[in-house]
Image 1 (cartoon, rainbow, N blue to C red):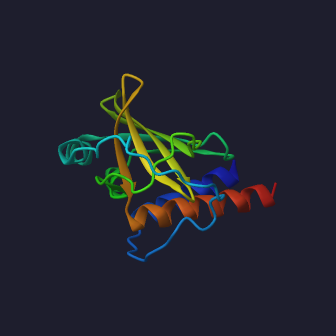
Image 2: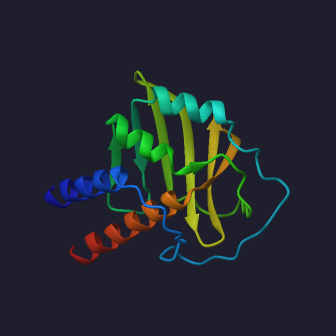
Image 3: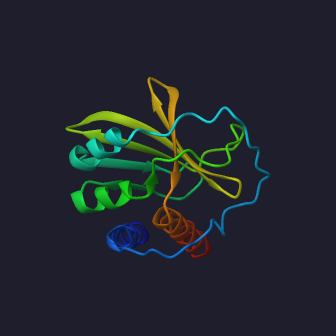
Amino acid sequence: MKKFIALLLFVSFLACKENKTQVVAENAPSQPATTTANIPPAIPSDILINLYENCDFIDFIFPNLPFSISQEDKASIQQTLRHINNVQPTEFDPQCPYFAQQIFQENGEIVLDAKIFFQKGCTYYLFYEDGVVKYSGSFTNEGILFYNNILQEAEKIRANG
C-alpha cells in the first residue's frame, strides 16, 4: 500500500510538472512498425476541448503493470489531456498490444474510452465509441516523457518486490 501511495504521489507530481524536452519511448520494448493507410482520423479538437473543460475523472488501467491510476484533480486531468496531440500517428500497426486503457468520465458517465499504445513503432492513442475505433491521436513530447516515467516507476516497483 505504501508503494502504491508513493507511486500515486509521484504520478501526481509528474502530472503537474511541465517539461518540453524531446524524448522517445526508450524503455518501451522494441517491435517492428507497420505503416498503413488505414489510420483512423485524428480526434477532433472540439472533443479534446470538451474533455479539457468538463472531464472530472480519468482511470488508467495498465494490464501489464503492477498498478492503476485514477485522477480527479482538475489540474492533473488537464495536464493528462495535454499528452494527446490531435494529429494522426505517423506509424500505425493494428497488431500492436495496447499499453493502457484510459477512461474519461464526466459526472460519473463514461464519455470517451481510449487505448494507449506505447512501444517503439507503436506510439499512439486510439479512441473508441461503442467499442469501435473512431479516432486516433499521437503523443505530445510531454506525453512521451510521462509514460516513460511510468515505465521507470513500474520497473522500480518490480525490482523492490
